[in-house]
Each structure stands twice: as C-alpha cells, then as structure tokens.
Image (cartoon, rainbow, N blue to C red; front, top):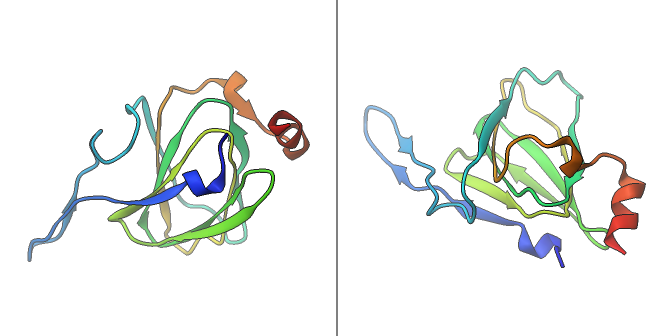
Length: 134
C-alpha cells in the first residue's frame, strides 16, 4: 500500500566547481527507469499545479530554480514538503495525491516520470482518489 512515508527526499550528486555546480540524474539516483521528462515554469503568483494522483506512474520532482511546496496525501495522512535545492528531489510513489503550491517568482519544477503520458493513469478528482484507496 502506498503511503506518504514511501515518498522521500533523495540527494542528487553535486559536482562543485568554481565555474558553477553540476548535478546529474541517472537511474541510480531514482528508483525507476526514466520514460518522460517535463518541467513547469512561469507559474503565476497564487496558481496551483498537480491536483491529481497516478494509478501506476511514479515521479521525481526537483526545484531547478526557486521554490515551491508539494502537498502529499495518501488518503489517511497529509504532509507538505518544500523543494528549494537543485541537488535534492522528491520521489513520489504511485497512488499518492499531490498538489503543488506557493511557487516563488522564477521557480522551475522538473518532473521525471516512470512512464509516458497516459490519461487513463490519472485520478483527477480527490473523491475518486479516496474511493480507489479503499
């Protein structure tokens, strides 16, 4: 059963250099094979993203720039995680409701997913999410 305890902050290797730092995300950093990468940016002040769960897909979120909050809900518990370091990411397992809020100006959220886009994998209504958890 998926719980918010299965969602964890994972370190991304950071190579420090006086010319600028470099971080690399490969399959040894995240616990799934990478099938899709996308990013959110220019999120207007007060706007929210997410607001869904995945039946099977897992994701890894990174604040490449700025910060934002990720609200995780497993149907029993809720937890807020603030992402604000480009060398850390949040692993979100399947069957977890997520909402992204409080984007700072210039924030960029990188999302690495375990599968390609499949609309049938999404649960977009919270009541449907709760019903599926039973």
